[in-house]
Length: 583
Image 1: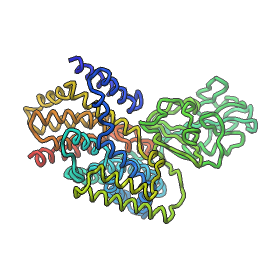
Image 2: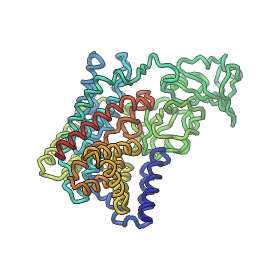
Image 3: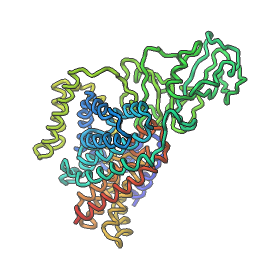
Image 4: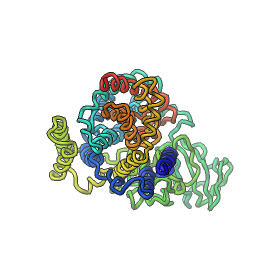
């Protein structure tokens, strides 16, 4: 019984830590795994089983293959062609979402959203359409499309790996499509018809001040400033279009709020809030030097990069000045945007949080690693013919791999390994590039989750949860049990990452199947779909986090449009599982 209570208390603490973002997810899960190991709830072999799991290794190889296709630029060119023309927003949404959902069935959805977001925003601005009408549907379309195939999302591969680990055959390549295709079709239909009515109108030309996507930037007054010892009003710093003077940092003193009669002194650091273009134009004003995180000015010839801090960034909960961006990424932070907050401190003192949008000055060797989602394209060079040909070669090999897996010629892991080897032999990907393409923090989190799932089984917590679900739902039939399993998984995936939620609930599904003497596979499919169907919060899925800041959304916008979609996906899934797969 001691192990039971240790696991219960630890899991509650883990959920609180993940929900309130008290640390990086992989660190939280890693700490929980070590605790279970030290208390003897799991053995060393059980603690490390996730690091050699077939699903986890397959995900690692998929990062490399999908990354090689993404780097070729073919996906980017596809989006550019989709966005040409002068069709109505409704028709444009249909034309955009359907191909994106299809691509997401075979390519990791995160790079798809990264590539398409700036293009969608640009098209919207050129055509007088609000980007907020497009970006959430874009994210949701990739999530829906990812449910169609085994490799569409890491969640499917994780559940597949768990099935194989427990002696089952696992999913076939298109086995999930029996649910994935219907929910994708119904979900896209809902988005095309209703999203324009449910999503906010955040057009850049008529945003009210509270809705502006404000960056916080910092400028230093030098000896060349023509308005030295004059007031803020006389220097016309209160009438800058799209810019607001938040505070003045003088020595160790903060002057805030700033009145029009405040006298300006040499060495003052002016903290502004405003849009990107206006903040960067401060550099052109005589005597004002836009500052980066280390407190110095930046070379004007470098390019600007807008990037979102991920949930897995190594810089989370650190001050900008302590992250050493210059050596880690060959870049410097010059402005920070945090949703619905006006930051009033100097750039270097800002503590980074997940979802923060950074405006950085990047050198030629800029390296975003796995700390950011790049939104502004880093490289604006045109693709050459060799890039395109090599990209198509990657796609051809990827298609062959899918065919071999579909017809059971090779296992998923073997086919992925073969495709990766071909990429290395033809130098489409170098070992160094492969290392950077793999999201190691995601793999660590998934690997740790396997050991945690074993602890749930060993301690009896999974059996108790399954017994509880069956007890309260048994009078209402098997459909009610499936509903409770789906809802619990879906709630967890909104609180933590989707893969962790799948691993957490899989042991419960096993116990439910054993107790009710039903097949495990339909219940495993239910868990996989529920873990992927994160539509009601911006923090439950990576693609939602990407469009959260880029579209100028508020938290409740996801709930408003995501709740009906969640119901549609849930009802469709449960009906198919109960009356077709478990008939």
